[in-house]
Amino acid sequence: MGATTQDLSHEPLAGRPCLVCAAPVRLRVAAWTAQCPSCGTWRSDLEPEIESASLHRAIDTGARSEGLRELRERNNRRILDEIAALQPLEGKRLIDVGSAHGWFLEAAATRGLDAAGIEPEDAIAEHARAAGHRVRSGYFPAVLEPGEQADVITFNDVLEHIPDVDETLRACAQTLRPGGVLSINIPSATGLGYRVATLLGRLGVKGPYERFWQYGLPSPHAHYFTPEALATLVRRHGLILRRTVPLSSVQRRGLWARLHTIERPSVRSVIAFVGLWVAAPILDRPANSDIVLVLAQRAAEEPSRGV
Ligand SMILES: [Zn+2]
Image 1 (cartoon, rainbow, N blue to C red):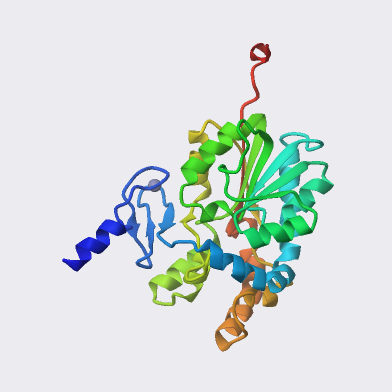
Image 2 (cartoon, protein in one colour; image 1 turned 30 degrees about the vertical axis):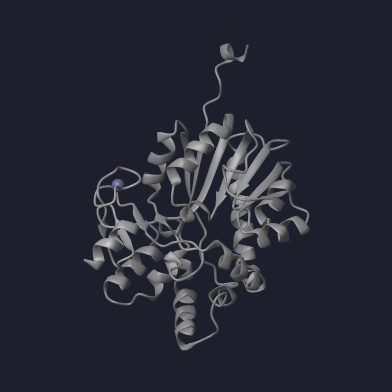
């Protein structure tokens, strides 16, 4: 039958092994998302389109900057404080994967880090280089020099877009120096916003759920992990889990611009704005946060191995 030919080119999502615990996942909420019944990890089969993403993100740079910058800057300071609690920052080499416009690189440099970025979208990478940041175009770990190492590797709103998370984390463990820190800032499957969107999606109101997954956008999400599942993943690669910290995901200031990064004001967007404005203080409580920061560290080398 015709369906058989199609199945050969595109493996069905239902029944694929969970990336964290290998249990077969089950379709949930939409035909393009599934959840692991055992550990709660979510995955999608949405495909990124990097080239159009480039165009899209270049166009929306202004609105995105205005709506998100303050929230990002606050979170960036927090992330650097958390990393500094694990190892001194001064003079240490940092790689920011998916460095976008270079905001995190800028924050890292002010703390004395020797910070470099990797960014797959060439137009964005060029924009960051023009602003004075050291950014390589391409993908992690493919663009690393042979034997290249780092003291800190960061993923800010990036890991959820990468289909093969396991391979990425393996490369992190190999690239980090002994005592090096891996910092992952990522949307959480346990966040209140995500849970409400899931509930609404099951009731037939798909808009918020699609927005959470960035469905129909050039750079959709491939995963939603619980903090526990992420901890399991980093431990699998020999890293030591240090901290799991809720980060701020919603604030009233800049919300209008943030909601209209990709769409013009409409009845729908005004309803979303009012709803989020009212709910912002509740969504922003640490227990409800939709963004989590996971910090892991490579074990320090034993002194006897030092020569
Ligand atoms: Zn699982």
